[in-house]
Length: 216
Image (cartoon, rainbow, N blue to C red; front, side):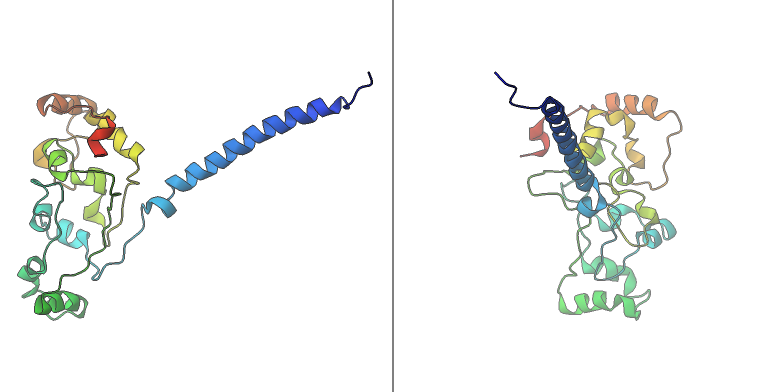
């Protein structure tokens, strides 16, 4: 029986198969790169707010504690957004006529809340509790980044599940003593691994990776 296909057909078939594999791998790599990029995660992107609130000025320069504005962070899943009266406690006297703060004064006069844009906004299918993380020694800047250096606030981390799991799988790399949770310039006095393992034991921190922990 005469040969139906030229011998080069075998080479072509092999090249096609391997080419398809490399093409699929390349497409997957591009997809994952885009998924992790700031275009999707919004990490590093400054959010425009009704007023240009500076954490650097209020936290680092004035020394205002996180809990002064985020009042429920130690007892609730939500850290809390300060009402206008919190702002006016100072700004009724300080920079009381500054044009930049007119939206605050208008909110105070009308009783209409300022519409802040959430910087760290998790999907609805993700449950996150601020209070338990604070109790277990997770510092604000661990998740929110160097807030004390931000003139305008941006999302420091991707908030992807793989980022959350880094801590859930190895909490000793990230935790700190509770008294330094709200500190913006804390550095461990001893090796973080040694300190972290001690804190994990002392605070009874479990390595929680079950899906139902966050997806409820």
